[in-house]
Amino acid sequence: MKRTLSFAFLLLVFAACDRDLDPEGPSLFDRFAPLEVFDSLQVSAATVDFSSGQSVSFTAEFNKSVDWVITITGQESGGIYEIKRFERFVEPENATWSGNTTILPLFRVEPCMVVLSVPEEPDFGDTLFVDITGTLAYEGLLVTDFEEPAGPAIELGDFEFELANSGRRSDTIAAQGDFFYRLAGIDNATGGPTDNFFVGLTRIFASINNVTYFDVPTTVPENLYLNLFVRGRPDGLTRVTLGLLIDGNDSGVFEEGPDPIKTVEFDPTYEGWRLQSFTAAEMGVTQDDLEKVVGIQALLVSLNNLQPDPRVEVGFEMDYLIFTQNIPLEL
Image 1 (cartoon, helix red, strand yellow):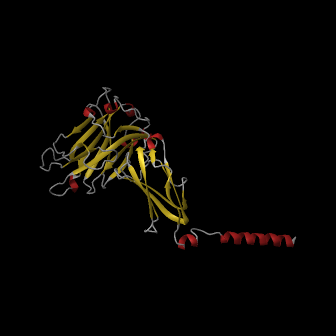
Image 2 (spheres, rainbow, N blue to C red; image 1 turned 60 degrees about the horizontal axis):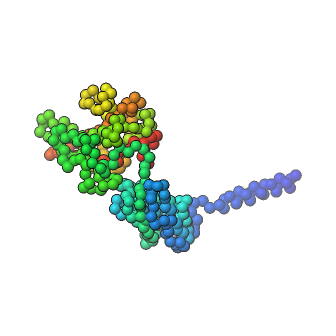
Image 3 (spheres, rainbow, N blue to C red; image 1 turned 120 degrees about the horizontal axis):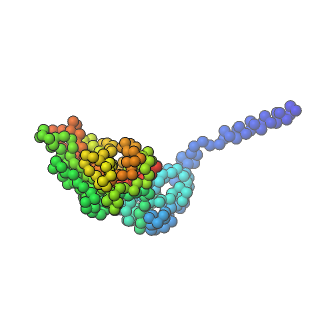
């Protein structure tokens, strides 16, 4: 009996010793061995149509596990998608691209440069090209991407004649495609009735989709997201008031006064394009309201209490307005 217990005790000791020998974290070989490339960067296809559900995958092999980065850059849009891993192998399981984006703008039909790099090895880089023949279609109700003129379906409200270079434009990189919509101007500082923070607005009516009311994916306010890309101003003087226009008297159109506007505010104090997403609940919209959303309003406000003297221009650009259900737009 004593011999049996002693033998069992020794087995436990050896088992514990074996566990202690298991390495934790990167091995010494991974940390200090010189980097070698066994297989260079390859792609599964030279062209890809993301609009039909296609994807591309990448392969490569190193002699050890390393931090590697695949950076895909649109040669016309400037959009970027990145894949980062700590692995020895680049393979479909960890390096597949379905057309999504890490850094805006969204990709276009365009050639893309694909670079495999190792941050700890700045002299290493492997490059190839992939041509996009069809872009990724995002799920949701697309309101507009401003690619086509909308006529009376979009209203520009320059009621105080303070807007400048506003409306549908293409004079800088859009978040998607070639066109976007801009509101920009300087609020009047004369002390008169127009010295009131308000600069201008735009309204996008449901008629842009050939309907009276937007056919939103859900009428549950907590589950409905309004998403848009917004290009901001880093000086912190711009405020955006985003709202849903509700047909409160069942006339089929928006009427100033009788019809409510449910809004949310944000300050785009940054450079470049970013995704902004808000639930209908954040705007104070009810389930009944969502049956009668006749339009979307974006209003430009100057934060005059922060303005220098003389006042400077405020503004923002917006692009790709889309309603999604349950979750914000996923890039």
